[in-house]
Amino acid sequence: MLLEPKREVAVELVVPRDAGGVEVFRAYRVQHNNSRGPFKGGLRFHPNVDLDDVRSLASLMTWKTALMDLPFGGAKGGVQLDPHKLSERELEILTRKLVQGIKDVIGPAEDIPAPDMNTSGREMAWIFDEYSKFKGYSPGVVTGKPVHLHGSVGREAATGRGCAFGIREILKAMGYGKMSDHTFVFQGFGNVGAWASEIVHDMGGKVVAIADEHSATTNPKGLDIPALRRHAGEGHLLEAFAGGQALAKESILQVPCSILVPAALGGVITPDVARSLDCKIVVEAANGPTLPAADKILQDRGVMVLPDIYSNGGGVTVSFFEWVQNLQNFKWDEEEVNRKLERKMGAAFESLWQIHREMDVPLRTAAFVKAVGRVARAERFRGFD
Ligand SMILES: NC(=O)C1=CN([C@@H]2O[C@H](COP(=O)(O)OP(=O)(O)OC[C@H]3O[C@@H](n4cnc5c(N)ncnc54)[C@H](O)[C@@H]3O)[C@@H](O)[C@H]2O)C=CC1
Ligand SMILES: O=C(O)CCC(=O)C(=O)O
Image (cartoon, rainbow, N blue to C red; front, side, top):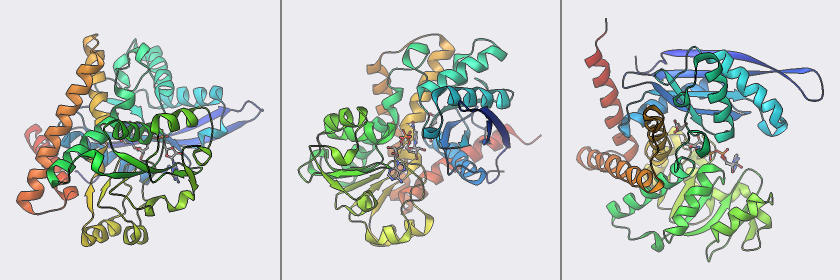
């Protein structure tokens, strides 16, 4: 029951192109498990999306919501495309057609999408609007919406903020001192990488290198992250940042640091990379950045891995807060959201660390022990009739 998704939906999206003609895109929504609550998980637009990929990301969501102790199950959606090749109008048509294709299997008590790679508040607003045309006004059908359209303050930064809280927890647990005693490298400077690096920087950490899909920049004295975000926001390449030197983006994972944060694609830490990286801790802000064979190598090398279902669990945690606010027609302030997020990250870390110590297993195994236990218990209590 836990290995296989409960439901898989594949839809064909036919989009009229601005230049004439139509193009067909494949889209998937995989609903892995809902024993603990409605299916929940992001929607990504990326050329690498395929059904298998979405399946594995959907199951990670089940374990993530269970580990974070949120009343949700797990799902994921993906459309196979390079969104940079479509205009805003084409993307809006595509997103609305996706909703038309899956509207009967999503909903505030059924399945609640959210942002993931290459999607943001803009797409979530389209989803909310299109779904509401068919089912009535339903802000709770999707999270990560713009703040002025039933979104929650703090959701945009939440995955990065949760990641930074998680780093603080592991440093404390390992007796490794404070943020300011450490150097950090980030792969990915989108929603998660930009917010996580900025909050780590605000907490005193020295971020010495960052890459995105185009280029990379490094400064052994520490990058000024707010300035780098302004630079990138103006459309400039990271390698052109005046406060750093250009670096080959392919070498980002080998830059020496205490803490390496992959915050982009899955599968980037291959066995070869695992043998060559030069850090004490890998914090998996991305989903599935470490291949299983590489995980074993990191373990043998004594590199600690803070697993994805914990490290990036802050995003879905604040999605839960957004959903609760939508259901109550009420708004919390940012201080309250961030305080509740901090408490959730602390509690999940505590349970993870306790299992890690008591069972003498890696943190990833400890996370799965906790999460699978909670999901299996819910399945049993609900019965099988
Ligand atoms: N947005 C969210 O709230 C959450 C995202 N995640 C995960 O975090 C990761 C990043 O997601 P977002 O930041 O939302 O996506 P995003 O689309 O905002 O940013 C992705 C970043 O990765 C970079 N990137 C892509 N390919 C790369 C490559 N080959 N080398 C270096 N950089 C590359 C892009 O240039 C961009 O900077 C994904 O694995 C996603 O599943 C996990 C939990 C929640
Ligand atoms: O905020 C959410 O509901 C899910 C975000 C997501 O896709 C993830 O945690 O991987």
